[in-house]
Length: 350
Image 1 (spheres, rainbow, N blue to C red):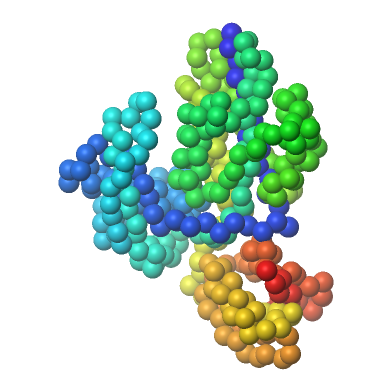
Image 2 (image 1 turned 90 degrees about the horizontal axis):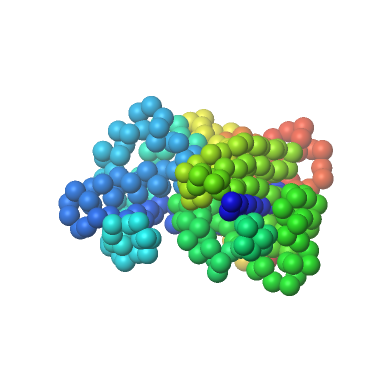
């Protein structure tokens, strides 16, 4: 009987800078042809894809009242076009419809219905794959050995707006993580091997194919002080990846999302080590990138200290974590910030 095990490891860590994700307001889907009906269906599908990427929730369109927004999806379009895609062996067409939506209009919609927002600075995921079968035994696999499954995973991660990378599987990887250590789910070895890539935590998907062709397995993750676990049965390895990764990503993303508030919170942000005008501009640009920031006003410049009055839409702790995860701010070890609305950080020059 052929058995397959797929291990997917990712590392989430707040000490590592998150990666800025682009393309959150763009969707790409396969369509049957360039008819008006296919175009309308494609626009609705890409709009749903964008809302999933923005909210970090694969089930967002199942919530009450969300389907009505697909009917009006065309009014949010900023650009549209066709391109040739690799549709896969079972695809009826390789024609892709790419739709870009207005960021300001979609953001207004998200806020008007109190949807969660997943900031565009997101942890990057490292994915390992190892296989065991009656012919080859246990071995690491990747895009060169199982290109269809690798491509399926790539498309899923792109549709979710989650950055990731595959390991090199070179000699250094072989020395730091053996196939048997991966098979045995030895966390210390997995952590050590993953540190090379400066990723942020780890997730594991374990899959085997039964004699009847069913795909069964388990996903588990460890992110900071949070853990998750579940068993999955599916009809194929591709569907197993879908049924595992989507709930897993939903659960992880929920730790970073916030719901924009109508009444923003005011904070005084003090940033030290801002020694040049170029650094001053970079600080403001970096703050504007943080989706939680609803508004800011520079209130004082004293030497290399910059004082900024901020209005934030989410929780203060989430904002502080976003500052650190940007990789450009280091929180100062001061008790004053905990006793007031003040936040104190050092600017980290690139």
